[in-house]
Amino acid sequence: MGVRENQLYPPEDNPKRAAYLKYKSLKTGDTYCKYGKNDDVNPTDCNPVPNIFAGTADGMQYRTEVLAKCVCTTGTGCKLWHRPFLCALHSAHCWSDLG
Image 1 (cartoon, one colour):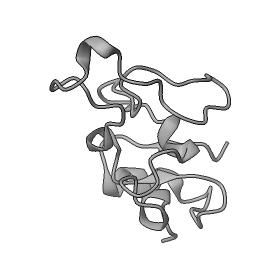
Image 2 (image 1 turned 45 degrees about the horizontal axis):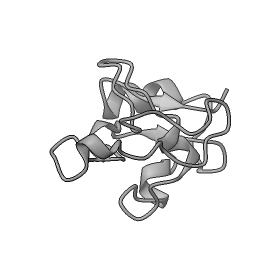
Image 3 (image 1 turned 45 degrees about the vertical axis):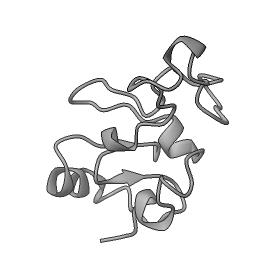
Image 4 (image 1 turned 60 degrees about the horizontal axis):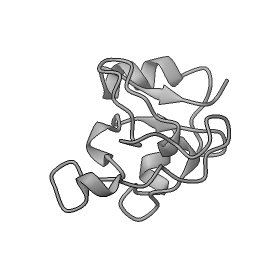
């Protein structure tokens, strides 16, 4: 079925992967970057946590819990022809930058 981004690059070990930085849940609208990205088109990181939230429950820069089970990007082995099926099988919501 192909390899998904989050299988090759676990988000806990690779928090700045473009697929994660650009992720937005279709179901909930939640984004991986809690406080936005440093660039809307070509992000390299999430915006830092505002000082007011440092050390609180809202003090998370990356939200790995919002990522779908299937996060696919170019070069990971996900095929364009089966992407909709992967998403339907593995999650109620999925993000892809395959086109």
